[in-house]
Length: 249
Ligand code: IPE
Ligand code: IPE
Ligand code: MG
Image 1 (spheres, rainbow, N blue to C red):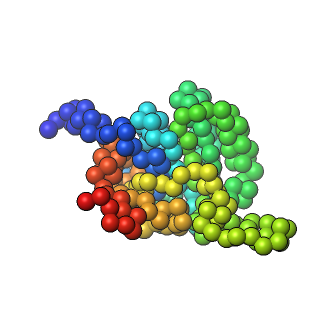
Image 2: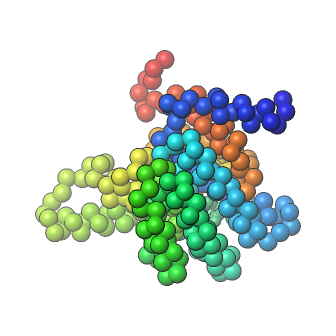
């Protein structure tokens, strides 16, 4: 099969009426991509932005309503200062450059994570991007920044306890807890993708991914193309989701 025929083929195998409502991606492998090329790690992060653009554009075009990208975890502060500073710089550059394109594609930006603990200039650029894309009605692009699922649950419990102190007792159930997570109002991810072959969640959406379909590829994030995303969606559409029941067959 030639490369060209593969490109024409894959999108045709996707059923538009059974698209995942929410795709979440652990974008991993930028450092290894750079190492293989004897480049500094930041070159991998920079190359990863191209893959971000492609994934965002593909989801918007297919009509996937929500795409969440794990961009910086709460544990990533353990990395060297220089890498963190360069990552924050890249994020600011992306936000500034991309607003126009996001608006052109009718994409609304959202963020999840302990945003208030990010550097001030990053918060300002984020706020600006959120404000400028607020009215868009197409794809919701959710950036997970300074995000950790355990921190998210701790923050939710703190909020619930402080409300309960004000209002007297409170009925605690799953929907109450969900409504206090950063992802309140967003559907749970149907499809969770991880690049670079690692078989772990790394503190990403632990509550929300309870019944997500997992799809892992050896491909490193900067090499992740539109075709990889098509393939993930095609495989997702072949899965039988049972949610603990007996399913259809
Ligand atoms: C993922 O790539 C990007 C971030 C965590 C910001 P890595 O930087 O983790 O790349 P590897 O895992 O070292 O290859
Ligand atoms: C997960 O990747 C975090 C992001 C993609 C932002 P990591 O590279 O930080 O995860 P571990 O350390 O391999 O588990
Ligand atoms: Mg990694």
